[in-house]
Length: 389
Image (cartoon, rainbow, N blue to C red):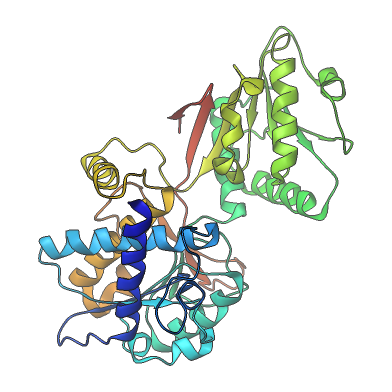
């Protein structure tokens, strides 16, 4: 049944992508996201994959499902918007897409983007003075001097700032060991932490960096622990295989030496941490999107998916909903002035977005873009998730 519902949804999206809804006096929102309609359907409109549903289609479709639910909610509140859905994985290039009337007339662009799409969309937004909300990628794509780009999924540097602040408030006098592996990405992460340390007020943390061998074992870690006090460890790598190996080793060590571990934002998607080999290990990590949802809207979305689609909504559903709802409401209220009010803390749905200007070069005093600086510190132990900061 869920499969059939998704096919009907895809067919509806196809119609939306072809038709033009130009309705006077309605602010125009263009949502650009990967739906892969050209690869999902043949020229006669027949679905190509039989009873299969390719995984690569799911994120974009799930985001769209959240957007559509938000549109329904906005319509009920009489927040009238002219919304266009554009498939970024159509046969057209991103530059061709930017020439479409739906994009040219946009008052706001929501983009579920890939790396090579950030710069063209940001340039278009800057030239046309239209906000471009990058809803998924945690990087700036090399964009600078652009007050019309907003990054919702906080950058790695922002995560380092948030992690350092959390550790400073809770482990300022504790021994903290940063376990890492050799690599350029790991060096960049270390440099970020060093930069944050130099610019942060208060007592600096006592960070000890340890580079582990490629196939490390628990005995490589044990010399850095004390049986009389908790040692906080930090994973100095984004590599998920490293993360799983590190936490498995720390969980074994935790039977003798009290240990906690602070991970990276990539840990949000590691489902294996619920398994028995990680039992009783306190695992922390940072995320810009609130994963603990007990509010009425979340319950309604969960119920809708359960009763209509026989499934559970993914994180991308909630991201699609809150992006469309929050910025749609702001656009309806502020109109052409939305760019100057993009950081207003109104219309919260699930996440307390804190959208701040970013100046990459403080000496130039040049606003390069806006970024969500709100981070949640999540604690996971034995499969139970809670927000601790």
